[in-house]
Amino acid sequence: MTRSSRTLFSLLALGALALGCSPAAAPTVSPAGASSQPTSAAASQPASASGIVLERTGPIGCDSIGIDYKSANIRIDAASDPDVWAETDTGKKLAVKWSEGFTATDGDAPVIKGPKGEEVARDGTVIVVPPGAYPRQVGYFVCLAPDTLYVLETDPQ
Image 1 (cartoon, rainbow, N blue to C red):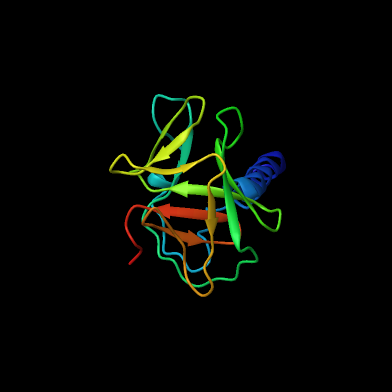
Image 2 (spheres, rainbow, N blue to C red; image 1 turned 60 degrees about the vertical axis):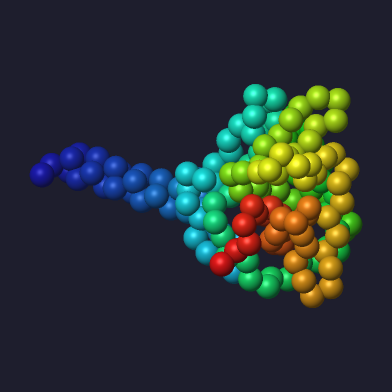
């Protein structure tokens, strides 16, 4: 093998190594204490024809992890990115992820509806974290993480 061929192979190998170690190639990290999530269900999907997109989560486990907030205010705005998020009483912005049964309707007052069609949240809905327990939103389990709220159709296993 010639010197230029060895150099080319070395550069290609180094490039592949660098690409494989880049943050863009890093695996998605589950929230602390959560079980693995199917990647297909974790991707954002349209909530309805309304234009509001709900970020989705697959089945997860929900263990006790440290959070520093006592409430979270749901925000909904189709013109924002993401369309739905939460702001905590400590001023932190949280992602909000929903299991498959939830949908969104757009209009003057956008609403997130549960699997049975009931209103679960609207812009300004406050989720209060009870001491030593997980909250429920209109009966649905809310898993708390330092950077995300997970609203689940069924309780975690």
